[in-house]
Structures are given as C-alpha cells and as structure tokens.
Image 1: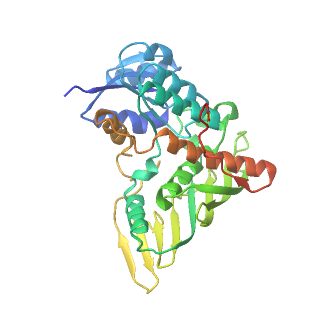
Image 2 (image 1 turned 60 degrees about the vertical axis):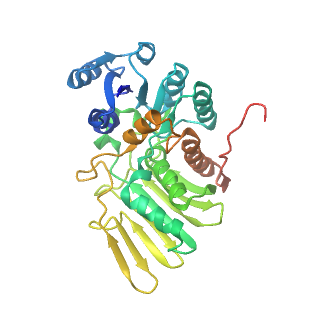
Image 3 (image 1 turned 60 degrees about the horizontal axis):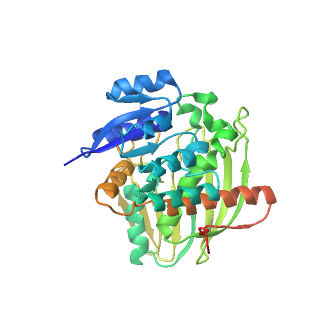
Length: 350
C-alpha cells in the first residue's frame, strides 16, 4: 500500500509531543517534511525524524513532497496556512481553535469544498474513552433527561508547556487572538456539543486576565451555556490552576450523574438515582501531565479519513460551531449581555 506523505507546519510543543510522534507511529504514513520559521528548531526536528526542513510553508506546499499537512502554527496563521494548503490540493489537519473569526472558518470550509480535500480540526477530547462511553450512555437513554452540566479545563498555563515559555505566542493577542478560552475552552465547548449531541445557542461569560500579568490575553473564564433543548450549565477555562490539571466534566441527568475524568482512579463514574455506583477504568485522558493515554487518535482518524475517503470525524463545520461558542463568550464579556451563538455557515448566493 502506498503511504500517505505528510508534513508538519509549525514545530512547537503540540507538534513535538503529539503530531510528529503519532505520524511516526502510523504505519500508513511517511513523514516527509517539517516547517518552522525558527531555523535552528526546524533543522533539529528534521534531523531527528530524517525529513526535509523548510522555513517557508509556501515552499513546503509547492515542493510536491506532501499529500497532507498538520497545521500547528500560532492561531492567527491557522486559516491562511490551511487555505493555502487546501488550494494546493493538500489535505489539512488543523489545530484548535480552527480560526480567529467566523469569516476565516467559513473560508477554510469553502476551500476544502472547492478542492475536494479533507479538512479536520484537532479536537481530541471526542476520542477520549470516558467521553466516548459517556456519549453512548447518554444516547441510549440510560441517564434520562439531562438537566445540567459543568465542565472545566484548567492548568498552570502554557508557559510550562510551550517551547518558548512566557515569550511564546500563546500570550500575544496579535498571534493568539484569545487565551485560555481558545486554548482550553474551545476543547470543552466541542466536548459538550459532542456529548449532548446538540448545539449551544446562548452564552453568558466573564473572561478575565488575572494570573498572567505579562500577557494581554485572557487566563480565566467562566461561562454559562444554554443548548438548543434548554440544558444549562457552566464551562470554565483557566491558566491559573497552579497545582494539578483539572479536565473534568459532570453531566447531571434524571436517572444518574456522570462524572468524567473527575476521579483519579476511574475515568468515568456513574452515580445512579437508586444509590448504585458504577466505576469505569478506561485509561486516563491524554494531558500535558505524565501518565495520560499515549495517543490522541486525532492523527489516526485524520489519516483514515483520507485513505478511506470518508468525512473526517471533526470536519471544518464542527470546528466552526465550537469556535462560535468562544466568539459568543468573548462578545458576552465585552457587552455584558447574553449572546446568541451564530453557528450558521453563510453560503454565497443564499
């Protein structure tokens, strides 16, 4: 079988810890090229993986060396790099948040449709075993009507994770566009949409910068969300959880409460109304801490969607709907009003 030739654009921490190792492990892939504007960094990564090095993404895209790319750049470059790749006839796996505006997201989706190439957004929380099991329980009706939820994603901040520390793009609004809400909150917005199988329609939020005095992006956010069927709950995203990471989600239902990634030993705990408690050991969620699951499954799902010519499990349309929740949260914080979520794709000629 002919292998899929893949390149990675942007060689920061997410590329080094997730994309590159997972492509290398995939037997269906030939890793052929890497790209980064930092010459020393890209040369080091290229030597490690035995691939070609580029400092210009346009040069990589025109090289004829890749069939697909991962876009692991700063957030402001997600859309322009992804669109350029799609227009060059190259499949794209783009990190989250997929773009910095609805207009950018729509342009990415349009480019994918026009080129006939795959566009997938790297929302890995959908593939976590506890989240997959919880969705099954919810869809089976075993939990009954859903009343509420709360979800949290917080850690000490990307300066402990990014290759550039405090000087990295995460803390620069012109490159990041948004802070903890874009880094972590968008993951949980996507997860809630996946678990509940419905869209968020209204958002109220407080989005603040309180812990990172060297940054000009948010590092603490608390949002109230309402779904299309009327379920209400909270979403918190923070770079101010200075001890251990919190990546938990709790769903409050008519017949049971689901606790996901809330117990250190059991990734899913189901507390039934009759007092019965069922504990599942499904493997820890992948995280920046040691001991998480080995792969995110994002790369595997992306590669298979190309080789099997299937719609990716997180296509651009899904990425845009999760981004729309974050955009609504930012607007709510600015206007001090409850904001309707605009997740409809504008079609030219509509």
